[in-house]
Each structure stands twice: as structure tokens, then as C-alpha cells.
Amino acid sequence: MKSSDKKTSPPVSPPGPERKRAVLFLPVILFAVVAAIFLAMEISGRDNSTVPSALIGQEAPRTTLTPLEGLEQPGLDTEKLKGNVALVNVFASWCAPCRAEHPVLMDLAEDGRFLMVGLNYKDDPDNARRFLGELGDPYNAVGVDPTGRAAIDWGVYGVPETFLLNRDGVIVWKHVGPLTPERVQSALMPRIEDALTADREGSES
Image 1 (tube, rainbow, N blue to C red):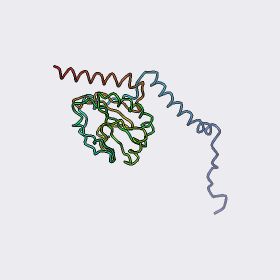
Image 2 (spheres, rainbow, N blue to C red):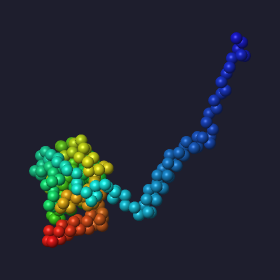
Image 3 (cartoon, rainbow, N blue to C red):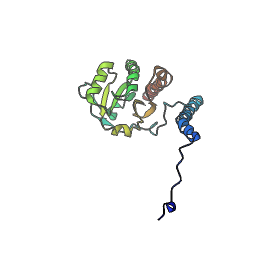
Image 4 (tube, rainbow, N blue to C red):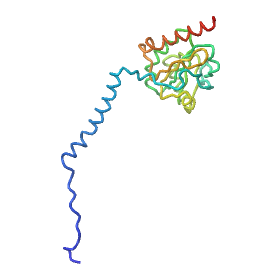
């Protein structure tokens, strides 16, 4: 076969400058789209920390968790919470927002009219004890959830999350993310007052 008869592939030209510029600006475009979405959510006034939950208005999932070893508090038993207004807080020592939220929980624990209950999520027991020893322990009870199974039953998106239960064990409020003093005053405390008042009126009738 003559060399002139061999088929040759057409040379592949390098990407043009237009294509290079498009690839270069792709991350910028994606960032702008994400930023625009978040800006629209802020402008709309939507509260992203209060996530709709199918459990609101329903009895909390039946949960029995063993206590955190080394603490004097009992574990988490939802049946034993009934008769009290209770704040159930999902936390972990490895969770940075939990650390930022903790002073708020310590302040709430001083109220004394409701129970503070911790659900320790996928944590190392030694680290959890150190976390509470360093920052303070606001909880009346702490249950450990090493596999995250209980958190799934509660519909937990991530840590921290906080649930408010009335004296019947019904979830009346849920907050996703770290509690702040502003959020406590504007949303949580009014709901706690409502739960305490409603339960008191019910017992008097």
C-alpha cells in the first residue's frame, strides 16, 4: 500500500479562547446563582431555621436511650418526660455550631420551669463528657444515640436541632441550627409560655 493511500485523522485543534473563558468563569457563574437563591430567600422573609416537620402537633417518637456514661443524669426516656414541658436538644461534641449555641442552653437551664434534655448524636462518650465538662451541663437528662437511629425517628436534619414538647409529650415547635438569644426571645420563649399556660389551664379545668 502506498503511503499516500493511508487515511489520516484531521488534526485536533486546541480549545478556542471562547471555550477557555467559559470554563474559567463557570465557578463564578455557579456562585452567583447560589448567592441569588439565598438572597431571594432572605428578601422573602422566610425563616430557614424553622423547617416544616410532619411531627409538629404529634406525640414525640417513643425513645429510650441509655445515659451518657460518667454523668449522674438519667438517659432519655420520652415516657418519663410526660407531665413536664421539655426542650430536647440534639448535640455532639464535634459540632462547632453546638459549641456556639451552648451558652444559650446554659441560660435556658436557669429558668427551671421546664426540662432540658440532651440527645447526644453519633458522638464519642469521652469527647461528649469533656464537652459538657468544659462548657457546662444544662441537661436534666442525656441520652446517647451512637448510630443516629433515634435521630432519624425524630426527623433530624443535622446538629444542633431543638424540639419543644408539651406535657402530653407532643412536639409543638422545632428549630434547626444553633439557638441564638434573639431566636430564644422571639420564638422559643413565647412557645414555652404558651405550653406552660395551656397545660396549667388544662389542669385547672
